[in-house]
Length: 398
Image 1 (tube, rainbow, N blue to C red):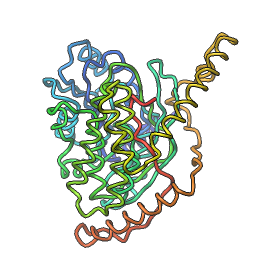
Image 2: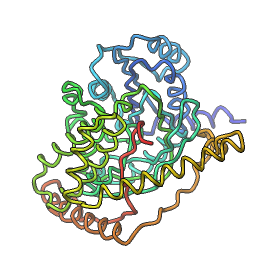
Image 3: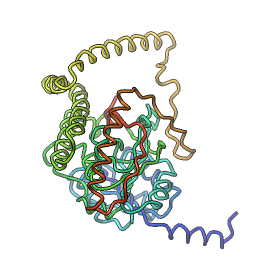
Image 4: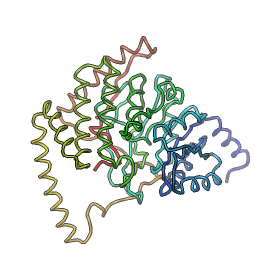
């Protein structure tokens, strides 16, 4: 049992730590918001303010948040008209008072050590390191792990690589210095206004990565929820949003070498192609496939072969399910554990072609960082990378 003096020292230590503002945009989130708030409130890093931006909800979101706030005074709610996730996050940033801001979607979960690990790592680095991200599991409506993201990470100046591999993967993984979030203008609400919201977090990350270094904790500390009806289940909108984000980023960074720009465009077209396929939009699917085939002539052939393989795998699963009476994909599922230590993440296998591609993009980042050094006062860049994400993970990915 702790003595009163031990408790006093513990409390002093918590408040000596920099304040972290947790910003949670919430629109009709009553189904999951209680679990999400408990996840934030149970962080081992205690010096938090938890700001829920109620983005014009018409369900019981406000009532649930108000009830939770009675039990945890760190929680407060701001209510606005429905303006979209970008505007809601910007409201939270503006109203925050912490040195750092961490974003959490209203249906996602955090491992209890996430913020502590991020703050400890970022505090050791100079201000040119503006943000830090973690890896994630993808969970269903019951908090069961459907699958895990690939353990592909990179750190330092990563703009060119992030354009292609889109490391962060979701809006609940990032912690950023508040002054930098304000400096780059926060999140861009024009995507939602144009009817193509969904990838505003990627846009924010790219504007951040173009100017600053980014750190990573290579552990799965986020439970990223997938379910029908959330924003990223609008596949048509997600595909269009991703293409527009990359188009704007390339236009704003004309100094990027053609190789890196082409790599980013093709990777994003592939993501958009699958989103259009899921949306059953034949025209956009075919148009995007044709665009990809100009750079990768065998793209369509690979699609056909992969389709045949998936049909075979589906038939095997059907036979196994019929024989055993249970879907083998669900037999060994476990729930996202917010308390226990995260499992060790192993590096994935890489092809020689992928390694060459990664090395070339890493060299581009080194060149861009050298250009920024005299402008932003960067120290010489140290390249430290592991294999990178091939595709951005969204709640709609399968």
